[in-house]
Length: 324
Image 1 (cartoon, rainbow, N blue to C red):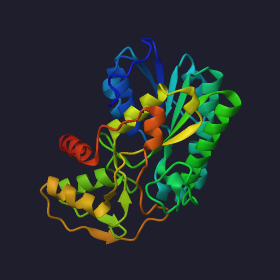
Image 2 (cartoon, helix red, strand yellow):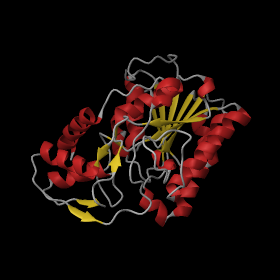
Image 3 (cartoon, rainbow, N blue to C red):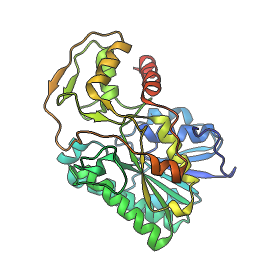
Image 4 (cartoon, rainbow, N blue to C red):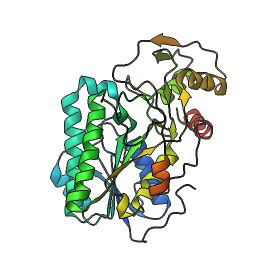
C-alpha cells in the first residue's frame, strides 16, 4: 500500500507542473523524500511559492517560474525528464462558468503544449490531472469509466478534451498518457481562502475562527472525498504502469461517499464547535452526487488507497490546527 516503497531508476527526473499548488507541492515533496530529482514548473497564478520554499536549497529540486501556455517554456522544462506529472490547471466549476475563455487557454492549450513537449523530448510517461466533473449529469453511482453524461461546466469540458488528447497522443505518437480523474481531493496545504476555495479547508478555517459557514444547497449532496496521499500514490504508480494502460483515464478516489452535512457535523465535533450553518443556493454546474468505482485503477495501475475519509480528515484537521 501507499507509495513510499516504489522504486524508480536512481537517476530518474520528474517534472511536476503546477508544482507550487496544493497537489503539485505534495507531489514535489514526496518525490524528494523518496530520493529522486524533481523540477517544479509553476507561474504562481494559483500556486503559492510558500508551498515549495522548504524544498529550495535541495540539490535535487529546481523551481522554474513559467507558464504552460508558452510552448518554449514547456519544451525547456521537459529536457532530460523521464516522467511528467501535469497538475497545472485552473480549478473551480463556478469560476470556469465566469471565465470560459481563460479555462480553454490554460486547461486545454496548456495541457496540449505539455503533451507535445513531452512527446518531442522522449518522456517515458505523461500523467495528467483530470476530474470527476467529466461524468456530468450521468445519474448512476458509483461513477465508472465509460459511463459519462452531459457536461455541466467549461471546467468539465476542458478535462474531457484533455482526455481525448491523451488518447490521441498514445494512438498517434506512442506517448504513454494516464488521465487521473480526481474525486474531491483534500489535505495539507489546500487553500482555505477565497470564494472558490474547496469546502473542507474553508469550513475548518471558518469554524476555527468562530465564523458561520455557508452550505451551498441542502447539504445532502455527496462526494467521494479523497485524501492527498492517495493522489500521490496514484500519480507515482501511473509512472510505473504498463504501456498497455496508456491512453486511458482512471477514477482516483477513496471509493466512499460522504454527505456534505455529515462532513460539516463531523468537523464541528472534531473541533468542538456548535455553530449552525447557513444554507445558500446550489452552485451552478455542480454534480449532485459523486462516488468513484476504482476497480480500473486498482487493476491497471495497482492503485490501493491507504487513506479512507476518517483517517484522512483527522490528519487534515491536525494540519490546519497547526498551520492556520
